[in-house]
Amino acid sequence: MLSATVRSLGSVCCVRSLLFGCTTKRFYPAKRKRFYKNVSVTQSEGQFEVCLDQRKLKTPMGKVFTVPSEGLAVAVATEWDAQGTEINQHSMHLTALSNTVLDNPSNRTQEAIAKDLLEFLESDTLCCRMQEPEELAVLQHQKWDPVIQWYEDRYNVKLNVASEVLADTMPQETYDTILRHLSSYSIWGITGIQYATESLKSLILTQATIDRRVTVQEGVALARLETEFQTSRWGSVEWAHDLDREQVQARVSAAILFVQLTSASSSIVTKKVVS
Image (cartoon, rainbow, N blue to C red; front, side, top):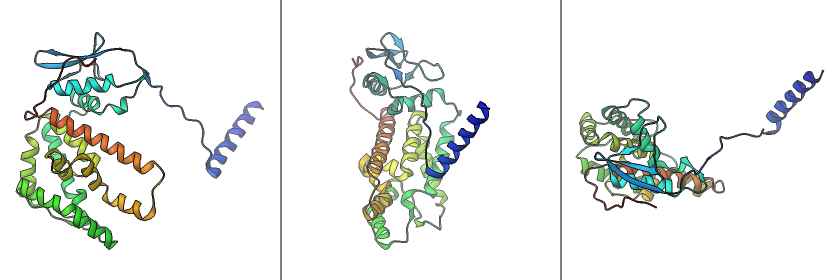
């Protein structure tokens, strides 16, 4: 009798949730407590490691965390040193990107990632234009066309711009040229480019940001042009739009820094001991 009553009450709760939007309490995994005091960087056989007190940092798959750049190691160490009493792993983008390369759970090669990135050109945010409303179409023309022109001049390629309902392929010469450029990056650099491109929904803006044609803030604003336009007309959900913008900026900033710190052309001055 008691079990039947419990089942009946459970059914009532389910129905009530569906009808009135009631939600049950959700339980999320507890954050890890900070278990270290000091963070430092050491060099070993031409690679750089991060140490939490006297223990070497390891990847999720148990590998010793080693990176090819002292600058990247210091940046990762700074992420860990900036943690409070609890470790917020979602805020440590450079650590996550490094772990992706070191563990490589999908066994992706540099060439495979470069080819996948070419698919973003066909549906690149800057190449897919809205026809309506007219104000947005004009805004896209004003804001995006200069970046398109810069990209074509910078890489000596031709980009096809089409309406949102009529996607167009790029000339084969464009694919070949951009593929050669992307293939010049290491697995570290190409991983950062992929992360930024997925965040911006635009390979063009990612490369423009890497080449300092636009800042990260400008790149994010250009990628979110339609969203910001609609928000200006219809209003925004309180704090939600701002939070989304800040999160995208954080991801793109980390990705661009990751590319720069793992490129042979980067020149920086760093220190080994963070704290």
